[in-house]
Amino acid sequence: MNFELHSFNPSSVSTEKTDVSLVFVPHDFQPAKDALSVLVAKALKSGDLSAKAGQVLHIYRPVGFAATHLVLVFAAAGAANDVRQGIGAAWACVKASRPKQLSLHFLQQPSAPGLRAAIAGLAEQTYTYTTTKSDEPGRTLAQVVVAVPDDLAVSTLFKRAVAAVHGVELAKEWGNRPANYATPTHLAGVAKALAKFDRIKVNILGPKEVAQLGMGAFQAVAQGSDEPLRFIELRYQGAGKAVAPCVLVGKGITFDSGGISIKPAAEMDEMKYDMCGAASVLGVFRALAELQPEINVVGLIASCENLPSSRSVKPGDVVTSMSGQTIEVLNTDAEGRLVLCDALTYAERFKPQAVVDIATLTGACVIALGGVRSGVFSAHDPLSKALVAAGESSQDLCWPMPLDDAYAEGLKTSFADVANVAGRAGGAITAAKFLQRFTAQYPWAHLDVAGTAWKSGATKGATGRPVSLLLDWLLDASMPGSAT
Ligand code: BES
Ligand code: MN
Ligand code: ZN
Image (cartoon, rainbow, N blue to C red; front, side):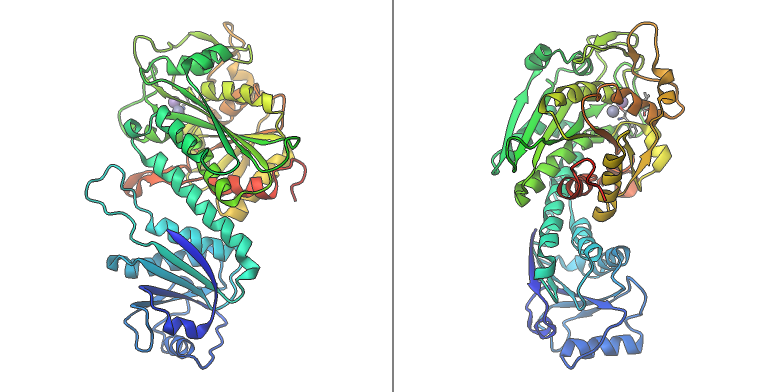
């Protein structure tokens, strides 16, 4: 889907030949003499367009307009939620006609949140998964024009919103693919394809290299499956070599059965989504490729399957992580922290300014925060605040969680330096406390996206979160201490 930014001109709405013209009407709409103004004024006066946020009036082949469909959307003050709701209602009116082109006209200059909500919202409405369907033609919408009174004023923001959409959609695609279409090797292939873009390099490690590095925790998870693990290292270099990079670390469990500590059958299919952290790292690199910002970013992905077999790691086994710390694997279903801890140790070599890991880590985080906000865990206050701020600006929300040392009590064991699980209480926090042991060398934050990376039920599907959050963080506030 291609997006273009134009400057708005009321008379162009009537002459524009397009499948759908969508017009956002502000609450303080001031009619002029052009055909659109006259129509909007009539629609408001008659009440056919009700002056309630998100309400729409759909007109087919409107007289005096070249567009096939005209949809007036009452956008009130242009708040993000009202714009999103309006886009949803408008798309519901026209989607059956399978439009190829659509224009979004803002009669009033949109706020930053309003513009982003329009672009992200339209992408969300029109996204269709096709990869493993034989009868799904997919998204027909190919050309989107965004028209605003002052296009220059929002062009940077527009580019970022569009790049975020492309990143989010890459993350959705790989999240949604079933595990037999999204193996660690497939994910490595995506990383290789990204390395074709300017400033991006990739390095893929397999079982041998990972063994050589001493990543015993990562290997322990992978050893139960015939599918070989992949450790993916992506580097985006947009600034000088002396500039310390931000490192993103993604959990890439392409299927989490739980291993020997096997999960119940119900909804186990959703564990194909256990690589959504990894997919978000790939999505961020897709957006960086498009924006070419002057920053340095490293993406690390530890990817494997977690399956039961005669070779699987067993409850009680002790493994040695790359950091040298020994870990008692009391529950093989707490595998995410095992693959992440070795990636976090590997991250030290980049002398990073900050490291953020992204993981569908715990069911407990779903209980704590539901599907609205991702959990942020960080002892580094400026970093935590910068991530929360990026969540707000990108409309990809997150919320800080505690990391008191007292939460680590349950990870103590007589048989290793640390156990991989504590009790049920505070499970999202104890998982973060486990990870924290491997992050002493740099400012670190952990994003638990177990509740936000995909939706269950009738609208089951990956969300592409937290690509937008990470992108805003990298572009606005990645320097620890620079958060405002
Ligand atoms: N991938 C799961 C976490 C998960 C579960 C995310 C359900 C979304 C929905 C993770 O590997 C896991 O199994 N975690 C366990 C940890 C427990 C064994 C301490 C969990 O949350 O139950
Ligand atoms: Mn698990
Ligand atoms: Zn998992």
